[in-house]
Length: 208
Image (cartoon, rainbow, N blue to C red; front, side, top):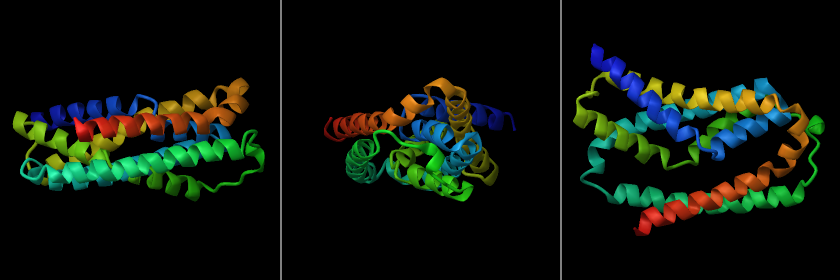
């Protein structure tokens, strides 16, 4: 049983550290919180974490095949380049189109915030190979076995580690009331730039 505590801590820490750097998910969590309120930001974060748990589940079941089929990771990376390029253009276009947004006029339901979180997390295709790699490493270390209890702990830790960071982004930005307008104006430019960075990193991983 003690290996389950190690498994939870290791996976939670890995998910936490992967989500801390500013990126598509945490910046959007902050943006939703600033523009639509803290509750919608938290609901968005729950949506993201739910999708991360689903992706972690998929990662567990394909991790056994990644060592023998490296072309799977290569394919996911190629798809990711298209996705990141699309969102880089999309967020830049959105920033140009809405230079001075008026959040008070935008009505977004809690359900839409949840679905937006699921949707944005779903396009981050690097999540599956990331958690597949973790699963392989934990298995080699003896921290995880292909059993229901181990798989459940791995998935839960991945979701909670992600949610904890998104929650902090949500609360932190929600308190910056004096900077709300400036953050709202510039958030799409920031997200577009982040997509370009992710695109470059993914291209480097593909070719090198």
